[in-house]
Length: 207
Image: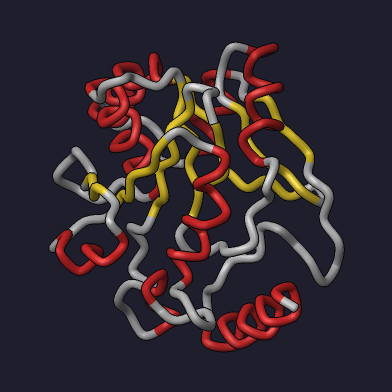
């Protein structure tokens, strides 16, 4: 890609409405949900890692490095953002930004990174995706230089909400993406019914 952006797929949720476990490892059709996310994100970034806690070997077939949350207590998605930033800060070559994406959202936009990068070049801070007036804080571009600031923020008991941290403290740019009623690029899979809907849509789009 050459934009100096690394992709961080966030897979730290408990998937309680799906009966627990790693819902990203469920089959969409021929591939898993996470593999479909990887396929859509890979052309947009220089490299990718997976943020998840617990035994990393369950993700071995994906071929991605697994980076756990760096703090002992659960911090939700913002802990995953910190994990990605901490990893990027010490990786070689070091990316200038990371883009975060949810492991349960297999239809993410093909222009996610370029659109977010355009916005952050103007603002200098984070950029967050939005569609139909709804913010999607997990889909965001983060300058790697925020790693230390976010670590201090969480260690001192600051808000664990991505939106509050990014928007209130760093004036994040909000980037609007086209969203059609039956083709929301940020449709995420939370229930068995959502999974069936995603399978049907994935089959339609593959034909």
